[in-house]
Length: 310
Image 1 (tube, rainbow, N blue to C red):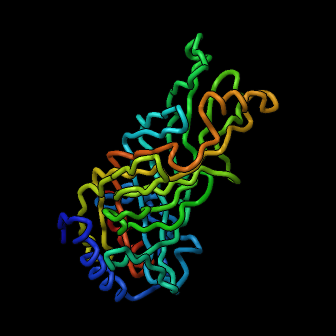
Image 2: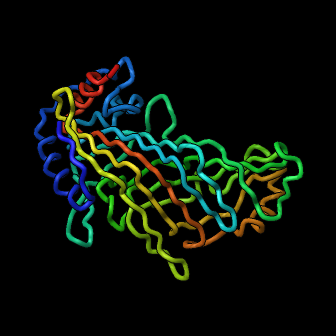
Image 3: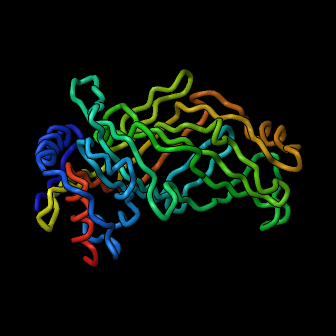
């Protein structure tokens, strides 16, 4: 078993070398998903969409599974901060198509950029509501007039570039919307929507927001690589304790708040939205991510099956 802690810079050539070996694996028809949840280095990947058309395309050069859990952090919109005190989980499948898209960083190194596929049997993003304080909105009856906010997905994850870890480049593009709950807000009070989302581009490097906003800097955390413990060709990369940040996004106004949206202007005024790039920020901290990659869907599925129960 190969298990080596690496810096982001050292990871790039190391993973590229192992990925080349992965591509030598012989493609074969996909097997059925594991009957029990995968374990070992594949823990949390039980919903990987191995049967999806995206991952099943025989022209793919690589396929994989991703699970990422953010344990803490914050999301600031205008004058309001949403504390991220409960885990936020992202899980999806990835594939590197025959066009082999890559990103070239300023230092000349390159990284594969993957397309994503939503998981089976669960949501791509899951997060719990958090109680927030909106200036000017008085919580005079806690539990009834309290305001809660929940981060929800507003579209697919795109431009997944795991080896951007440590570079001043987004690891992925994540469209979200913020669902606000309150006895007077109704069920459809949102900041952002599927058609007009808040588009986050979190990086483990340093952001470049417009002035006067100051750059934020993240961290790739501890990076490790290992091979499959059961003799398959899959490579597992883990990023532990990472910090992903972004303050380059814009935020639309509220919609659907109160009867006929009557409270939209009040929420906009109290929260200071709509707002342009640099006026909000997000920090995903203590983020642990596992990425399994293989040159063969059959081999990847075999690896998941073999790990079940471990």
